[in-house]
Image (cartoon, rainbow, N blue to C red; front, top):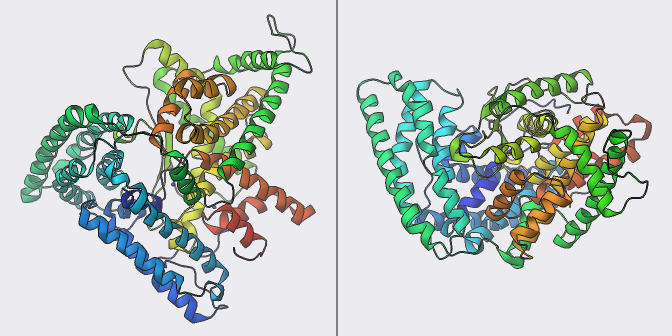
Length: 602
């Protein structure tokens, strides 16, 4: 997964991560065009800058992540006055946007207009209806952790300057925790959210101990005294907040993690920005589930043929025979996995292989910035195994982080074995393709080069996650790992995970799917190991309308490539197509289609 684009994180706060790219980077918020009437584009440019300035000021932590370092010493304010001001700001910008003649804008600005309009409506809905600030404690733990991590992880400025900014934020963090206690209504907080927040809270201290204290000698005199005092104050504030979470919030948490059909459908529409409905997503996912299992069975027949104790392999199997054959074939892949302490090292090795493959096969324009495999920060653990953390478009030449969560120390031997069977060596290769090359790292590098900063901020999670899943398919189609049939089988199993994500999300959030039903979908129908399925069950409770972005985006990317093949005919080639798709930043796929094929902007 990719860390949330800045605008999507802003939405949480209010309601509470690419081609032949030739244009040079710019800090302009929108793409200008000389062919459209200047007045309309000028109005939109000014409004886009106003919105961008407003959200960067409202969320200094995300501004740092984005690469705007004017607010590095400030901290997000989630108090009632700040929330009311943020809502009024969104309403004002939306009203002004509605007065601009969209048809008079350049085509590029018509796309950005549509995306900004969707985001503003989403922000207003989040503030007035969803109100995550009142029931989701993970908003606060996320801000706290990121407030320091975004300062210390990348060398965007001299270390003493970043340490002074970290000091200022640590001085303000007790105030954020006080807002957390004041804002959260235990009767509305789901217990799973409270328990996860309890586990994440002290992760901030790991950043202090590992990334700040070892460099404290860079400061002297009053700066050093202030740093030491800020750390001491933060430790006390975290201890106090931990006590409150464990003795007050967790025992009294009574909220329902299921948001229900009405809220879910509204959130899904804003999140996907796609014409597909919940029912259409379910129908396509169920058909894809059946088709993918049939493909896996055909591979299983080939790899098991002639092996001792192989299960029955009839040409037309029943459901039980299909299940047994696929499971037996997957066991061959599960047998090859890293040692418990070698998961990160294996990801590093697979990243090198994938990078060499993409370059040698000339699949897409390659990034000129580094990517580093890191151990996931403690404050971010508990939602997903891995994520891609790219620098913002205003931070040039800095590293992207491919973060991998370590195996928890308290897991039993069977739990560790379950995890390593799921994340066997071939699965880590697939994960690395998704998160790094040619998945999130490559795509977001291209996206950050697109001239419209506004579009970068408004990056579509569906486009981003869909591209990463499409990248997995691209590598298999091109013969990555020498057409290894077991890798192809593992790849199809990962497709099943994407399909299950879409079914699981609406099943849990709308249809009342129980844990047993969810585990059956994941461990039986889609062959996931118990540890992976258990973690995904937690994730499905903690989030809503994010898990379907993988499946919907993947399907939209596949549809787009098929259309390009038909339109371009003999002139179609993979490099041309990939570079073209990635040349527009990260807008919803439907807008990429309109721009690629010169169609009206809807």
